[in-house]
Image 1: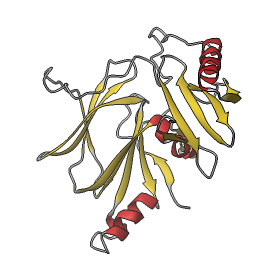
Image 2: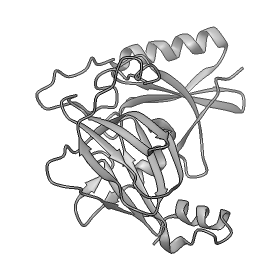
Image 3: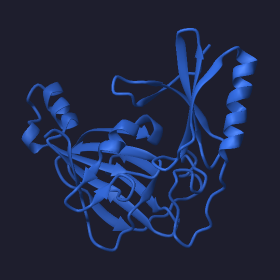
Length: 238
């Protein structure tokens, strides 16, 4: 089976979920700096081998992939674990093919970090080394993207829950958009049991687009559908 996701457990004293705070790719190699959902534990993930390729996708841009991440043997999925190795990886096969055989598929490792806000995937030839703790100066953190607490739907057991935007406000926003732009709201889904956003379809004649809004903070995006019915982020309509 292609893309067989296996949970990778570096050692037992790690949290289940982390955010990716910063990525550094320089003469010292590729390093990812992670922080736990309750902001109390930090990890540095360093790749000592050759890094042939990597890619990063925001959570809403990887929903179909995230839905398929599951290690049935250990009982882990994308929602409750961070570190995975992908066996028989399509991404690794693509890199091997693009290299015209210079980098054989047999030597490539597809490692994935399923962060609280993004999916970061690396093709390398050696598993990473994980160390605890990191510290940056304010100048080092200029380019960091800071996400509001709990925006992904995860937070610590002892932490105060993030704010909640009720579905009534989302419905009102969609109705206002429809009235102001001469479109019709044809679908509205506020079931958040499997996800952390509301969705609505707006339509004008034969054209339609979806509005996705986070349930904790007023962040929204526009999306279309791919061939399997999953959301694909797109530009705002004209």
